[in-house]
Amino acid sequence: QVQLVQSGAEVKKPGSSVRVSCKSSGGTFTEYDIGWVRQAPGQGLEWVGGLTPKFGLSYGQNFRDRVTITADESTTTAYMELSSLRSEGDTAVYYCARVIFYGSGNFGWLDPWGPGTLVTVSS
Amino acid sequence: QSVLTQSPSVSEAPGQRVTISCSGSTSNIGNNAVNWYQQLPGKAPKLIIYYDDLVPSGVSDRFSGSKSGTSASLAISGLQSEDEAEYYCVAWDDRLNAPVFGGGTKVTVL
Image (cartoon, rainbow over all chains, first blue to last red; front, side):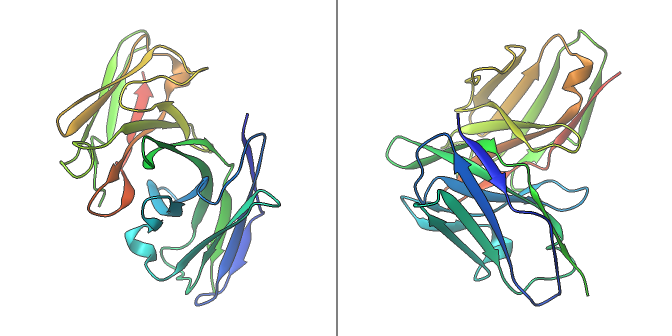
């Protein structure tokens, strides 16, 4: 059974970058396995990004040119780096989740999810 | 503004049935699998329906999903207090090359 453990809370200045890690255990691991979703305070869920076998990097509209997704298969850990942080909008809980693909690399669903990492952007 | 449209909230008494709708388009729901997630207060989301109407192992069979055209629905039967949560629909979008989310529906058990 796959379990995901995320890095701890971060406080960052506007304009800086943050890197959140997500360690997977209990199953196989590839660079496509982990996707990232965020949730601003009191708001809904929003796709940040993830690697897909069909399209390479898939990212949400608010993250074009700002998100970098990497994975280290030797340590079964995925990373999400978000740059040019904005005080309004980027403060959120960032979740990693295992991505399940089906058929010929079609994006399926997210299961399980990590516990989340709170990123606070403040001057 | 979310790509998938959900009603903001629904309320019902214990033991009753509620249905949550999710409306999209041909580029997402109409052509790809729909999934539903339950988010309890202060917790991470949890998958409760995948591939339109399949229930993961360990999830109550009181949850059921369906899809018709560009709309999908989640039904919860025999409503219980533990079902009070936010529910989100998600589907891949072929135009955006990304999964898109509904805005969430808050279920309140009266």
